[in-house]
Image 1 (cartoon, rainbow, N blue to C red):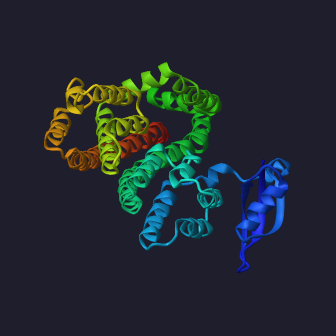
Image 2: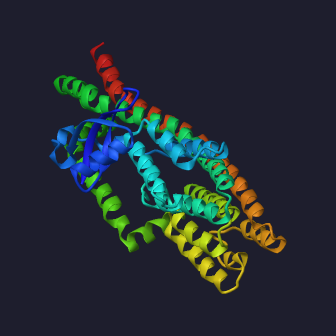
Length: 404
């Protein structure tokens, strides 16, 4: 059962969160063991639905995990006891969900559970990649080094993704503005002109009739079209993509899109190389590292190839020999760099260089795509607004000319 609690710390600060326990008494004991003085404890199922926390707003972000990993690495390097480090970091988390999970991890570690096993109990926050890196550090006795290395790699991945997301803000803003402007014209401006033209009794140009007809159509049927569109999206994302055939179909054809397909390929290649390099550096066997990478790469085509590579490595084959069979998904440069790393015994360094190269390629391609999309969107908006203006003002000009 889950209980929502409100409590005070020894310093008098108020804390709120959710604790999972078998009974109310167990929940109280857990909270008291964390030096919390409980002022309210209610079973979650008894809380009215409108007072419950909305999980989407308490979702643990990638930034939260990056900061937590960096701070844990620093405290471990400073020889702060692990349990104390986790309790300190847990108590300072602003996200109540993350705070709860970190404190649970601290409690598990205090009870003798390995850190990697404690992390593995929360797969919605800590990925198999993260857990296996911690496990490799525990096995090799180099947990401090692995934590530091992991924190640095997570920071780089976060910065890379932030660049991509930041670059998409302007085009999305232009699209939103375009729809708002067009919506205002269709619902507020065009009805006024349609009324004026209707009372004038003049013959309207064909282009004006088309614009007025489209405006009336969208006013009457926009709600229906939006419902159908949302229903289609819901079908695609919540049903079709959940099936093996559906995801396979989308993953295959999305890589064939002009520009966008090449961009995704570069992104998947950089992600695969970066994660494989990190796992190998952490001391994991190559076959195990490949299995983990197959789960990280969110595309069934690449996942199937990586699984094939994993099976081949188990049979004594090299990674590069299998990648060469798929030049459409792994370009010759990628395969050749991997081959060089295998021959020289520096596969980790080769993969790291590949990841850096393809990350730069992703950024370059993103800049190129945006350099085309941004002016195209502006031109599209200008043509729509200009076309509507022409459809309105041409008959008005003709009407005024006829009166004179």
